[in-house]
Image 1 (cartoon, helix red, strand yellow):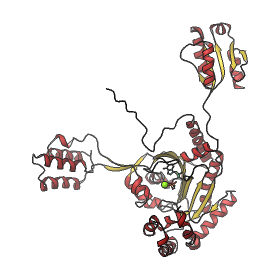
Image 2 (image 1 turned 90 degrees about the vertical axis):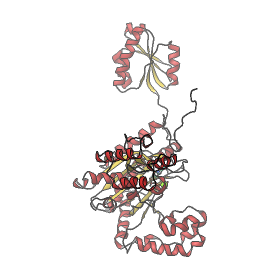
Image 3 (image 1 turned 45 degrees about the vertical axis):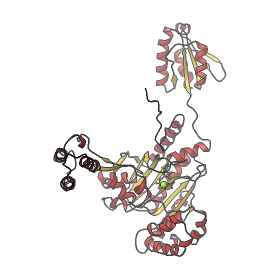
Length: 489
Ligand code: ATP
Ligand code: MG
């Protein structure tokens, strides 16, 4: 009996369907156009990367790396099934694969296998020995650990280093768009496969004008796609030197310790692991306590304070409205100095549509030269949701011309007409089978066609075609060249 269970998209993933995909395309085309006017070029990094790269860039202690990444072992194909041969046979196969380069040479793996075989007497014929051996061998890590990317800044920095982009004129300005993957609890505006549009500026110093221009670019883009009711929050989180953020974090810790009893369990834990994140708390009862905590703006070193003041001035010069938000700290480890977040309407608590900031140490952390960096990532899913909520969703796609044809000779003409109209840029529906004109016009209407081109054998032999405007039912006669002229006008 056939298996009738229905397949469904995996939890947290979804199909983007028409007509919504038209809106996605419009948003992406607008991003290409706007970013191009700011001198950014597109980069398309791979969807998976070495786990180590992401762990180092994003930070091992972050939620993303510690529990949200889709990580798997990239085990080389073609290895024999250990269940189908003796333990020594399998061991030989592994050695052969390492010698031939099919598997990475790893003496520790061989040593482990030999140790298990000797120590636990796993060469015996007993079923128990066989099971232990299989359990052990199947759990062995033989391939590289790779992860689906949860964000793309790490990839862009890796590419900058890998392709020696520091030799290009600086700064290098890149943007990307595409899917990201995080194993989060799915809800409105939060998915396991979601899409980001992001940009990075690498190298070329840390002039505050760079920060301001990047922010101006996102705001211009949001304006161009007519995203309404947005708010830009900015902050500076200083830099990692004894006279700046670390000193502030100590003061913050001390203040949090004093109020510890009044904080929830999460915040209590964060006092040790990541005190800045307490400022992020949305818990009602913690708000009065947070309001009394020391603020980083009062503890920035002189350079960071001057940088922050200059960024704000630069934003004003560019006519970009912002709100200072001293509690904006951002979740990823690599940020320093300028951080910003943009929120939009109609999204409930998932209302952040863009997050970004400066990350001057990141390229160096990944093994490259000391390089300044700043960037942002827009949550495209949320941007689309917000556009839809404010009535800027996509209309179903209609057709310019529906060709209603009857008869063999008419069909040949219809095929040619469709080709010419499409070449001229019109969307054309050419039905694959003949139908009565009444039926054809009904279908043209259902598809939202603007015109129906009526082609019967009469029209074809007279060389005079009937074009019906579906909105008002009027009809006009044209020769073939006249028709094209009329439609273009
Ligand atoms: P949030 O606080 O909402 O979890 P975040 O700080 O984790 O956001 P970033 O890593 O800065 O987000 O990513 C930038 C943007 O990507 C976010 O502002 C948001 O619009 C979007 N985004 C992040 N995670 C998701 C997700 N799981 N589903 C949809 N969009 C997301
Ligand atoms: Mg998040």
